[in-house]
Amino acid sequence: MTSLKIFDENNPTAPIFDSHEVTNHKEKIDKIVYRLNQVGVNFEQWQTNDKIQLGATQEEVLKAYDGDVQRLIHKAGYQAVDVVSLTSDNPNKNVFREKFLNEHTHSEDEVRFFVAGEGLFSLHLDNKVFEVLCTRGDLISVPANTPHWFDMGPNPNFVAIRLFNNPEGWVANFTGADIASKFSRLEN
Image 1: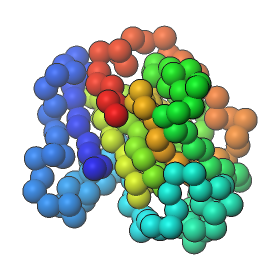
Image 2: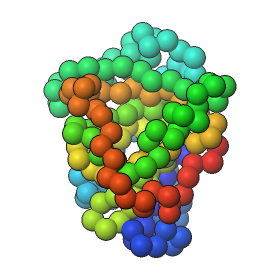
Image 3: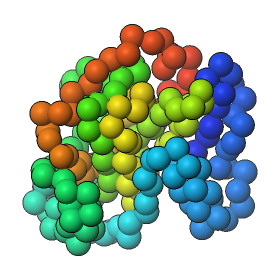
Image 4: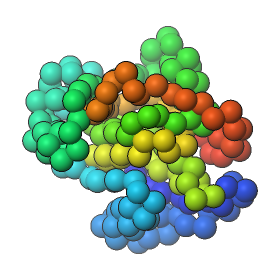
């Protein structure tokens, strides 16, 4: 289930906002969208296609979500689109997980739509940490140069569409800060 927790960067144990406190799904999503939009992060929920599950090919995934993908391409000028898929039986899952667990930035937006599964984005903005648990149907666009980290959990099972302005620009530039080690990890 999609969630957002906001913490003071110096207090990783007591959220100052927790979307779990909201009583209904629409109100919760509206509050998540509002809070993220306040700090320049685009967050949307797309209608999901039940025929697309873990194991679907890139072509099947992109065909199923072509309308929304084309809307984003026209809106933001993305030049490339692909699909990333990772399952818990992948022998390199720990290497992939570790790759983005430390705070880093990218020189372009990091745009992900979760077709299936989940992932935890933690964004370090305005002396706060925004923990966004993205699940099926969630699209997040982390603005360029935003310090953040990503956790797919010890047992990743997800399929996500990625959109790029320049795939070569999507290189992790690590900040050297240890803040990510102080905050929650995804347990799945």
